[in-house]
Length: 357
Ligand code: NAD
Image 1 (cartoon, rainbow, N blue to C red):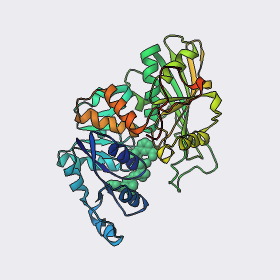
Image 2 (image 1 turned 120 degrees about the vertical axis):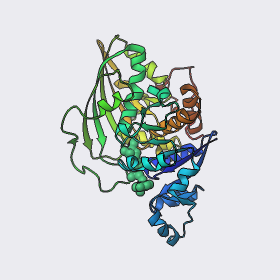
Image 3 (image 1 turned 135 degrees about the vertical axis):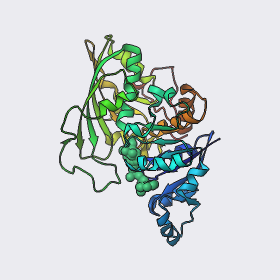
């Protein structure tokens, strides 16, 4: 049993904690929080032990009538691996705490790559994290691009990828973020940092990215153009992507026209928090002209890195291989969303996986 602590219980941390708690080979030691807010209540309701992330603020938990199991140092001591889900930049500050207590840690994509020995994506470079002490799970956008580009590279060869990322302005709970009424190039300079970040997990690929921010909290949208080394027909690309458990090829029949309906689809499927752990690629958008592949995909920023965090822990703490870890994570969480419509799946190859098991 791998004992896992989660430091930082916000958007990513609460999802990672639930995912860890669902693993048969992992035990969630507890979660560290800065304040006794509504998310602390969610942890209490789930029966997770709470630790004070900032020792000076422990009194606030007592005043709110919330019992603590200890401070964050106690959580680190009790864990074989800590998953740091603190805001960008805080993870790097926390590394000292983990090092001092000789506890390996997984960091998130908001940290610079040099926070860890390895930047990680299950599909792209699982083995690189084997036995590493410090691993960074790459950001939601980089995760989405890596999952898409790794199979394309393996099957057809990738000469160059060009991606425009229309990013959500903030997460649903982030009331102070924006834009409210604009679409903003961000960064204005091209290329954006996303392409180089993909190179931290797929170093042989050339990926140019440009990024904008849009007034939505739902998902990121990627407009993808990949020049391949071979010239496949669109159906071959579609079949390749449909075989990937962490890619959902949206069938035309489903009449899903954007992130709103995608999230509704996830809720109807019984997904916790309406989470979409998979890249969502519009089947109709997959088109090939010569060696140029075009498609649209959406990435649920709050959710897609969650299975990757579970796999990163396994890569660091066990000898389980990528295929087995991915399968185990997918089965326990219900990753592998597929439509019952025939134009969304390869008939006979896989049965739909219930999303809520
Ligand atoms: P968040 O703000 O939703 O959650 C962070 C939590 O950490 C909050 O509850 C905050 O109170 C707490 N915290 C602050 N300081 C702390 C400290 N010193 N010790 C412990 N906890 C502390 O942030 P998030 O969106 O979950 O992002 C976490 C990390 O995941 C960042 O690196 C981010 O870049 C990355 N990430 C975020 C998203 C996303 O879209 N939300 C997607 C992928 C990766």
